[in-house]
Length: 319
Image (tube, rainbow, N blue to C red; front, side, top):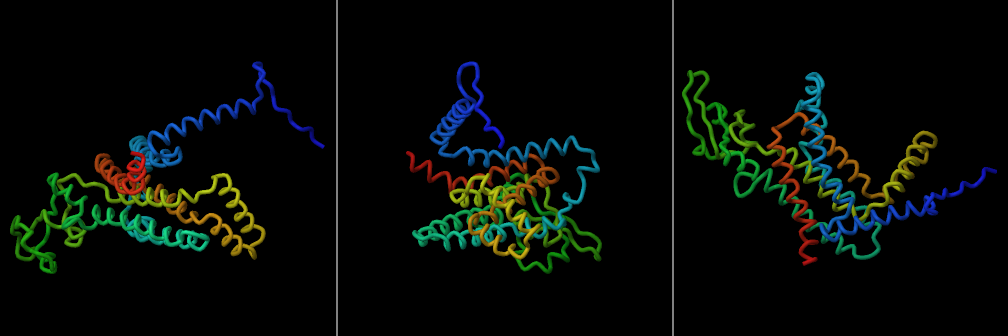
């Protein structure tokens, strides 16, 4: 039988356990101060700051990496992860949050209606902000308005492409006339970036906020704040995940049942998975696409929406 390890006593007469307890108490005091001052937990502050860390590290790697390492599969907009997930980002966000609350509601014994009501209101608010910034804001979306206001436009539009456009043609200006087989060239400051791409025009000249950065940050913050109240400890999550991996290796017959139990206990597993993918794709975007200033604006607006929905009510209640 192995001897029981004794807690070491330091020169000042205190055991290591006492010192650890003292250190944890200091950390708890700092955590409480942050919570009282910012109305945010340590975990929430860390998650919010993580996006800035992502941006800084990605830019450092971009400028210090060799050219063949900087330019690869992931800076091709046609890569599978970008086309399948990021381009349909809000659809995936919606699907994951529906699955998450489907499990939560099934397990809840009380307040089911209130949970659905509050979650629905928050979803409508964050979806509304996504629409305003990327799709429509009483005309052009916010990100396209910023581009136009800073001198941008959709240019080099061929008249042959314009003929098939069913929108208001008055918003296009004739630039020049080319040989008959090519047609005339137009430009516009009244079409969206999406329409410009449809017309095979060039979106150039202004400050172009990164819609990718906005989406990935906005979606990640929304998913995190929705799921955070249901988080177990990280240690417990990883412990159960390791059990699943053991089942895969040694007892595949129990795999389906084990997965069901795991997801029931950790309904936020899908949320964590999608946030992890978003964080990776954000890292790729920060490395390869847009100017730093354009990504910073996308990051800022990504913060605005989710923090306005989740943080502002806390601040108002504390006043």
